[in-house]
Length: 234
Image 1 (cartoon, rainbow, N blue to C red):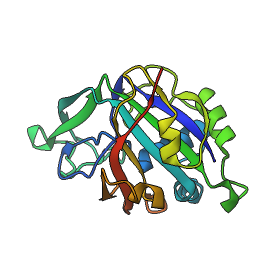
Image 2: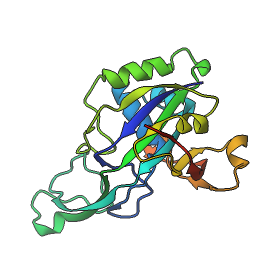
Image 3: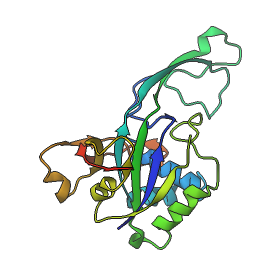
Image 4: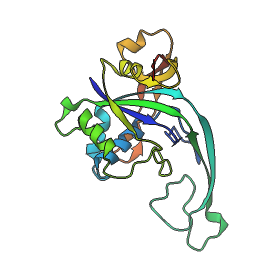
């Protein structure tokens, strides 16, 4: 199998289940975030919902955290004075003649100075319309639009694409990535397979990181394995 190797650093926000106006971030990127990033790089339009949904269904990904960095919380207050469709909020929509009543408070969580590697492959055999690993690699090198990592303010600090890895599995691909932080062990997240379930260290969790692109809502979950993984010296 062939995987595109992505590296994330700088300011990041990977998303996580949200309650109210607190917007947390996981240490591992959400599948829906990676799908949105790739769709943006490939030049998909947001109205091509089935096309993006098919991409999410075909994606095969895993992540290794070489350096967790630190967490930042951005405290925001904003005034919703008009019925703008771009604003999504669990609070009410303000009216044009309101003053402080239309103010909402939001806390957005970010990762700072992290070093995180993700490998991505697709099952292009499902459809000729799906991008190959080479298509993804080209799109990340020459993106159709400006890319951001989770939120508009999280512009890539360095090139996202770091090469193509050939491996038997996502886990094996993550093991091949060189690290300037030694050989580990590092924390990793992989799809649940026979090889990962055989590992004694680690656990299987249900992660709510899928999106129903057709109806434009976050919905759906998948089982992932999280545990230690070794790397190689850079």
